[in-house]
Length: 471
Image (cartoon, rainbow, N blue to C red; front, top):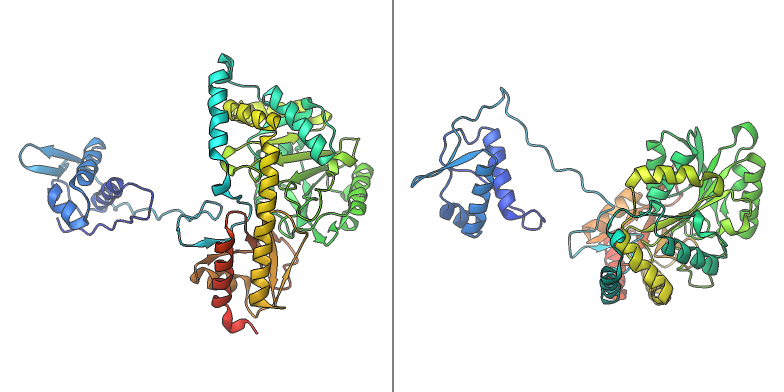
């Protein structure tokens, strides 16, 4: 058997499975015919430079799946009884890589937005909290929890948003979700049917996708230095029934909605019987002042749905967020939540409740606020030193990313490609626009999960990649 098998040791797929799948595909493509003796395990292990045990595991997989058989004293053979279709089955191409997954290449400097400092998460403290709840949890905590979340966590979150965001809310209106996306999805289903929905332009690309899934027509509204252009919202019969906004730290521009605009938006919603969905994904990390009061706190009429998440303050894998739902929608929302996931993981809720009650959570937030402020300062300084007056940063000093305009004679795609060739991954802002693309090539550069040395090195490599366009 003279067959070329290419192994990719950078992949997370075990080598034995890669070998087994390679042989399986060769059998289906009829490059190895029924009845053919497979290479002896020692010979194949030597040729592929793997241990013999790896090859044995691959052969065992082929035999278990019915592709091969072992003959006593003779070796391993492809089954003679295999029947193939008239045309060989073509091997499926590997699926496209998702841009929202963690980067696998270790030496790539990835300025991914929205990713916190994973290496600085206090794992030992979190582990102790999980250990305590495992020991003290009641028997029913290991069953199905309430769809709306544990009462103690809802109470503590209500106290937290009241204390930090000026939002007085009854715990009964707080629903625990598995993140912002689920909260928004459930809210859109609660408000259905919706013909159209106003969204910020630019805005998060996943919001565009979610709206398409719900077959809602997006109404993109421009964002300026004061926030959403409320004056461009239609009124009367043509008014959208839902507006999605990120008022505290808009994504991707980083702008904060001014108080006048907030009041203007709330007045518009009252006049047009509309619902506002407030996405408050990282308001904790404002560096020049305290976070602004929540938009929902300015609206006693409960026209605002407030969505929060712990993905940025703690870590995305926790999959815990929450939604403050107006009373008129709460029953329908909870009904949909029950059928969506039955309940959010209970033990993690207990551990988070302990952190909130003990003050550990807010101490961690204060620590990370200082870390991100320093990392942002490092990135801005590094870009300034290398690009001079050929770049502009949008928004207020906050969060874990910046949006940067580059005054360079390049498209966003070219800029991102040149950066990637130099070992730096950046994110074109154009994907966040539906209409009125940015005047200059713009990038979204996250700094949360990069230390200061990596940030400086990334800025240097980016500048080196673009040196022929820098004046």
